Image 1: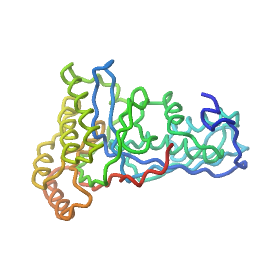
Image 2 (image 1 turned 30 degrees about the horizontal axis):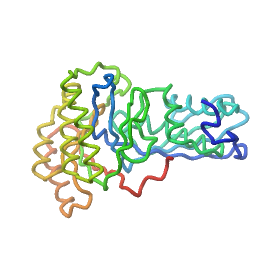
Image 3 (image 1 turned 60 degrees about the vertical axis):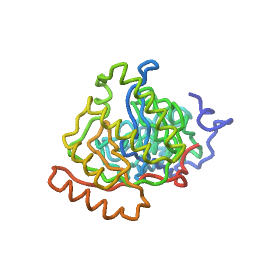
Length: 311
């Protein structure tokens, strides 16, 4: 990739030396849909952006020849920062700090969001804007990645790190989630062969088409039908011990459906964020999960006017 692909026609940076750059990226609550499509057996997912964020700051430094990253285990983000600096022919030194409230290993796209926030922070420090497509290309050589560099809901080939299509946006939704505990290594999970036969793959194609139509129409019941079916099918890969409890609770509170972190530890119930009985329904789910091991958390998805970070 050339610097012109990253920074525009000139590929030049106009930022003063040592400028502090900042970047953010939203996380997700698992995926609205995830599986394998029959066209080339391609793994895919459909993002579910949440009002939960990864943050990054980056300051280039002339006295360092490496990236100092905090927390120190975020080595992939440090590698990405160095790669961007190298593309611009700059010294690969600086201080990168990552934060935000995304729990790791839960299925919230924390690693992907860290990388996207890092790319935006480094670009900001250099005085350039990295497009979503440019960030996608940068991440392709690092690891399987969710499509959180793109605003809105997108269908994304996460193993290939390649956009399939933009799906649209939904009104804000509440997710009441049960976390069974522990963590899942997403990289290892993505290496597991998926036990889906040809009938499953054809069903995933139908589900993707149905979800795309449902999002375009704002049909939350149809969205919930797809997300619930995806959660059921994911039981072939990673069964959830308390799935039946959450399904019963979803029916009791008249939820739109279940939504799952396919490579995480959480399973949630979709509610309308403007539902006048939302608080009572949340309390009912909490009470219904009280005897289960693990925790209950509440999340909100991003609405149409809350995307401001990508081109």
